[in-house]
Image 1 (cartoon, rainbow, N blue to C red):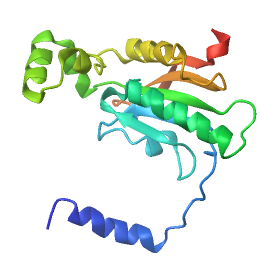
Image 2 (image 1 turned 60 degrees about the vertical axis):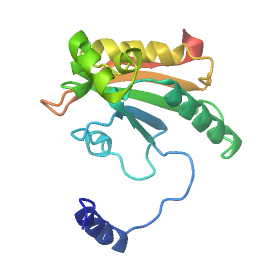
Image 3 (image 1 turned 90 degrees about the horizontal axis):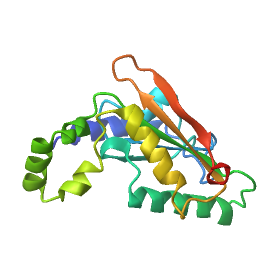
Length: 179
């Protein structure tokens, strides 16, 4: 018995009524980038169903090199496999309040975390979300400035308030061409 055992039992119940979703373009035409925090369930928060939107999660929901690579590949897939015309999708960057990466704003904590994990301080610092309104703006700009981002992709920035369950838009959808 492992900690996953009860979750596998839940999966058995899920699988009994499961109807697979065909591979295709996401119906909401949105890709969500958000934090891996266990209190944030993008499907519940945004009312997503299977097939609506891919979700990319990492510490802080930050725009990293690997996230940019994933988004470039998703844009390629949309065009190459599904012959998508016009705008491909919107990347909705969703940061949140009370993020555990906010502790990284404290230089002493950052130093201890780097020493304990072996992850370089600049790498850890790049995942910090102490002020989500600020960091989501930074990430929108970072993604819009990437040469890998398709001009057919737009980017927006939002903040989820853990305290209230509400999502507010900080940056409306912009495309690289509109800059």
